[in-house]
Image (cartoon, rainbow over all chains, first blue to last red):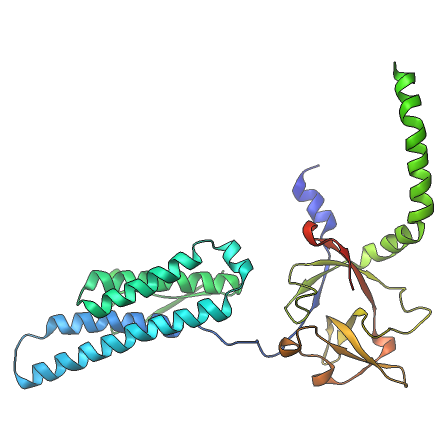
Length: 164
Length: 141
């Protein structure tokens, strides 16, 4: 008799709920994903500024400020989910979690320091992985943002939802 | 050779079976009674006592002769959605026979604080043992 058959025989047929109407915390990595995408978009916009007119310089300053703010927001949102939401059993399930979080914080820092499309894309990718882990631990469909590298313009946000 | 082996094993084996029959009888009955009523836990409101994915034995005859006691972990239908079974701890037993249920994780539990007391007759059984996962097997307290 195989192990799975033994487990099937042992398995309960009914579920009992240790139920809670309101989740103890409401977390969503979507804000971090949006912020990471915004960083990418700002890098794109900064690169497109051609002149040195006052208008151009104004736009440049604004884009840099927005990039700075949103990179900081990525750090903040990811940190909160990492420290407040994830539990030890999630870490057992995803041993990469600590390292991934650390890499996101580093990547966000790099995006502040530079105007680098590759660094911004890397940040987006890491945050997407973080979101995927988050939704998987919740047994919920994974909400991922369609990467702009796949042809979607960076200012058009398309979410993809796929079953966990 | 075989006879010698049987003679060597026979005594302790027979004694073991006898000891099991005497010591284990009430306990074995309880397991057999509970086995068809085994349940899987979902949700976190009974943390840290119960976790999602725990498999429990529920004794349906636990309250045949007496009422639920404060501190018992029981299974009862959700009064707001009777098809759904809840697992909670008895916090209060009223003089009128009602019971109030609470989750062990007070800040993450919807229980009698939200839906009020239940008649003790609604309680379907007592969750008394966990048999899975292997590292957490044992009696529930």
